[in-house]
Amino acid sequence: MENNLLIIGVVFIPLAGAVLSLFARANNQAQRYIGFGAAALSWLWSLFLLVDVVDNGPQIYRLGDWQPPFGIVLVADSFSALFTVMASTVMMSGLLYAVNCRDKVVKNESFTALFLSMMVGLNGTFLTGDLFTMFVFIELLVIASVSLVAISDNRLGLEAAIKYIFISGIGTVFLLLGIASIYATFGTLNMADIAQQLSTGERPLLARAAAILLMAAFLLKSAVFPFHYWQPDFHTTAPTPVHAVLSSVVVKIGVYGIIRMTTLLFVEEAAQIRQWITILGVISIYFGSLGAFRTYDGKRMLAYSTFGQIGFILVAIGWGTPLAMVAAIVYAVNHAFIKSALLMLMGVVSSNTKEKTATLEKIVGVGTKIRYAWAVSLLWLLGGLALAGLPPMNGFISKLLLVRSGTEAEDWLVLGLVIAAGLITIMYMLRSWQTVFQTKPETFQVEFKKEGGDGILAPSFLIAICLGLGIYATPLFERAEATVEEITTPQIYIESVLPPELLLNPVADAPQEVQR
Image (cartoon, rainbow, N blue to C red):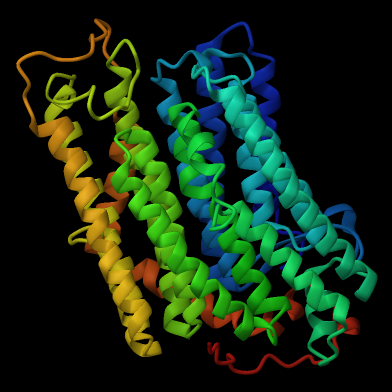
């Protein structure tokens, strides 16, 4: 269906909410409710969009009514619609957390507008049908997230923001050079049009260079080795609701870009790309997992953990079989809910102390003295089980699919390394739960706030989703299967976007095999 308003809604609603929040600067609480309301409406809109895509196939919206490949087109296929729901769920939860958050930065008159701008950037990146508009949405996301970290309560926020601007600038150069190379070669930036031209079999050298540049840019956006050093500082210094979004869904932009590029544009180069993706994935797993194990700061531990968890997703992409691609998508979605919930729970604990510290040595036993201590402890335990890939949580489904994918690919060495790294995750999550929630020291090393800490409604909602997707995993698994079937048949995307008169091959064949 053309010009489906459900597509433009998931971008326009948070944008309108951001503008509206600026008119309520005199009332901070009103700003927070406006932000949550806009995010909740956008979340519902994204669910309706996903249902529409499931029922009717890919949907498009042509801005200005320009026919592709000219003008800007937003495309909602199974892949982009699913990732939009993932992002909207976490963004809405972040703003729900902000309603009862005691961080000073949340009271900043620009906080809500910047947070909703991140939502616009995320949804727009997943839905756009051309490379330059993707670049614009990514940069909007970068500007908003850098601003939120720079104005955070943490005195190191500005330093971390400057470091990220530098490394993000390198990614921007890679992205722009890749886009410029594509345009110089094909005379278009519409992804469907590029895919159709590439399907003719001609592979100019400049197009291969573009593939390398775009892959480097997306690897950097996901903080994959060797582009990872900025991530722990930048994420750790962010306010809790912002950190929850950065470490759960913003890092998925790179995952989305890699999958989209290797299944739509650079299909012939995909086998070579995946070999490198597998290697970088394994290295990232161990850098992240060992970094999380070695650190004694709760927020930093979870930041390093994100680095490692993205590695698991990359390994699945690297294996490249249909089952492995299903595993990558399921893992990406489940990780978003798990990680955002855990970061919010760590925020709840640290917000109860006057120092707002997350250093494990200082918050020994703090989890036993806070409001709703039993509930927070249970939620952390469930979140830890999910991250470690243990039943009955959704992380178990992710790890099970990953192991099955490795068995199918017969890559026994990498599979063994993946399983061993999972044991490291169990160790650092168990250590944190034991330290914060099970130890009862004679004297505490921190002072408690009389007014208490942040609310637990948002992380409770996310953990409930994690438990639900663990007990009843069929809907997400079936949606991921349908997504892989669709994205591995590029002609479906091409025919959905381009008008019939521009099609070279108007036949959607059976799904192609995605092999390593």
